[in-house]
Image 1 (tube, rainbow, N blue to C red):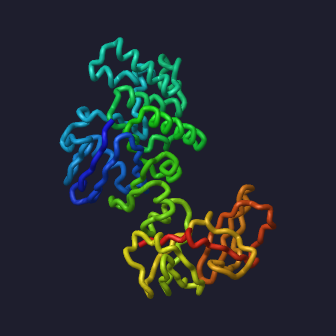
Image 2: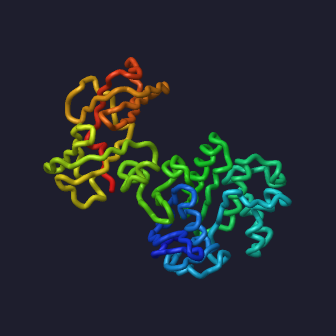
Image 3: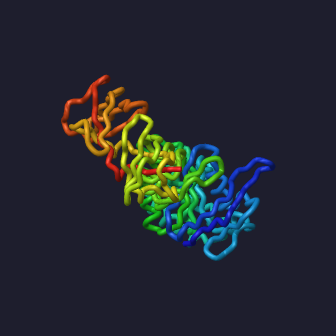
Length: 358
């Protein structure tokens, strides 16, 4: 297995900018995800790692080896494409063995390796089937087996689950992560699906407009987004603006436009280097951290009017108007009566749950 380093990589297509100044180091054996909306540069970055595109500036290294100018077939990477790119005229066995034939692996060794990898992806007994006789999930596993059978240093996956239905996506997501852990292979995964990224990744790189917005663990990306884009793209959040009115020890007190006073722990203020009285700040507050309050006053208790109530069985979701700000909450169902539209409601926002973004 190998680490991957992108050293200030840029990619331009004529005068159009594809990717700007991507600087990352992916550890050997890590599951690293490029996450962002369509057109953000994540697939372009993956294709530069694979060798299908060459950087306009910067360097790419696998371990200590500079591979910036190496063609794809000399990089020892396995790639799973969004459309799988399987050969319809070949059987499952032939599709999986194709890369070994290109590498002139002996028939005896190729047979052993294909059978072993078919067992890993749970395709035993499917070797003689044609591709059109397989389900979407089975085709995806053939594509994964074909990428793994060549024993690559790095596994690259470009939106591999986008063609599957929701239930099959969840099952296949588990299988990919199981294989990655079992093989210990360095894996780089491209997706626009936040749930995929959060559940599978060791670390995530969030991109927008060809620019890296944030790199971190799923916990960091979710709970401490660095800016408005990351906060709004990763799950649901409440974005409130306010003005700092006091800084006391580790706590910051903020007055919102609705007139409510909120307290946040200063240690959660990263990436802001300084927070000063009178400064305008943006706060991210996740709905699941907010709980309905039985009292209307107290530290970080705000009151509002219910705009919408949603009962899901396990949870009760509210949208309340608090002054001039909407506030979404997600509470565990404790059997309390559900407040209806127009009712007054108190909400407690734990100070530890308030994160500041740029």
